[in-house]
Image 1: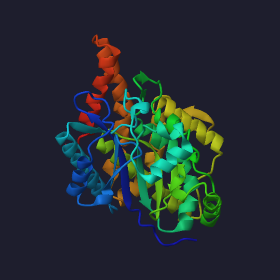
Image 2: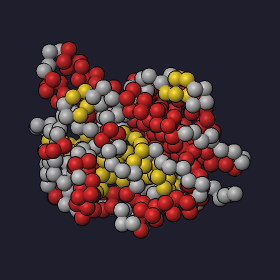
Image 3: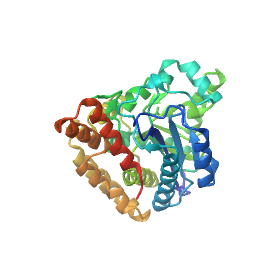
Length: 379
């Protein structure tokens, strides 16, 4: 039995899309000087990096001991990107898809890893015009990471539903709250994590793919939740990008609290029930399609339950952990998200309101981009 309490440190990675302030379309080839200046201002090169496409930029916080520290560091990163981008007539938007840009018009970042990925994955990689948020939680013991991997899978659809920000694709309202995952799921080694009885079993399966030359390392396993290759963390990857930074911090806080609660169950020789992937995938799909609107399958009851009731159960489950980690305010912000909607709701509302006011679809969808630019900035 593992007895050493995990560190439960926190790290957040966010991916932004860079848009031209005049056209509101993606900046397909932003100047290299912009990236250099962003790195100079944050003073840590690894905190700002290119993504697969040149119109994307990724940031990562430091390893943070508290949720508040993560909020401060992420806010700094967002504002640095926004300030530097503005000097070049650009702006970042924190959303998982651009409302009207076309993937075929984008340029790839010239890195060997990305060239190899595109060569292997062909068009499925070239159309990866999507962004997400990744939350790393420090869990130092490998066996504990493997144990919590399968238990945490139950909560992933709930977290996705609270984060949705990709209702549009190439100028069309898709009807989904998270269209992003329909694009991402075309890659292999995506979706909900597999179940492993131990960390060594997980590594044996990874090593089969590595030894066969299919992947370089486990960083090319892109599950919704995975043991990180680079850090002693569990990395939750199912989130859409949250336009509002405080929504992002809420979900990061909720993630670390859920994992701490599952760890406490382990200390009492208990564990969260493991459900079949078929049922978990049904909730994942419902979260993609409806977000927080139509409820999820309560796997214990075997019936659809409204999302608000499920959220209250989770908040009650982690209340003690939120108190110990001093992030009650951040965790309970989830109720505000439920009440006012996610970024996806706001985007669709902006679009429909513009149409109702007489705008044509092209003008209406551009008004969505304007709202995302404003919402991404941190005051």
